[in-house]
Image (tube, rainbow, N blue to C red; front, side):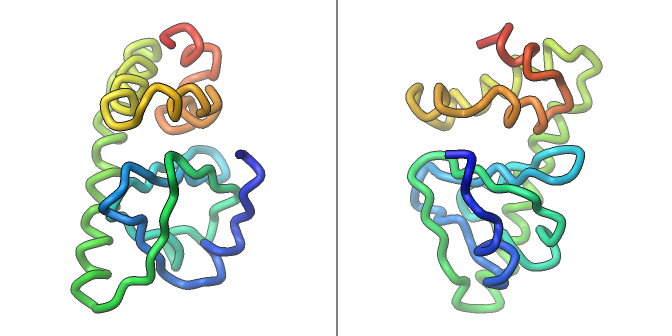
Length: 136
């Protein structure tokens, strides 16, 4: 699951995570990770620094068909970033870990969550993987 190459994200221009499925991508950057959920744009200038991608759920990527669709996908990506940003504003690492796990449990099924590495969730909210392990 963790061996997904980044080439499709970096070379194929802009793609959109299918908004009609419970799916997404965890995008590993140099010092953190970002979650691009359903409806989010991926690729292009947003993700040139992407080092690794981790699909979450039954991933489906689509090409945006219009400028309006691209604009909407950018807005949705920003909303996902803001959601994770609200979690990272909490000063207590255990609280951040619990909140990110709760968010993912509320959106994805238990089997999908169980497959996610602790490291992936930890990089989203700036905690150690063992902190995620403690709250699972």
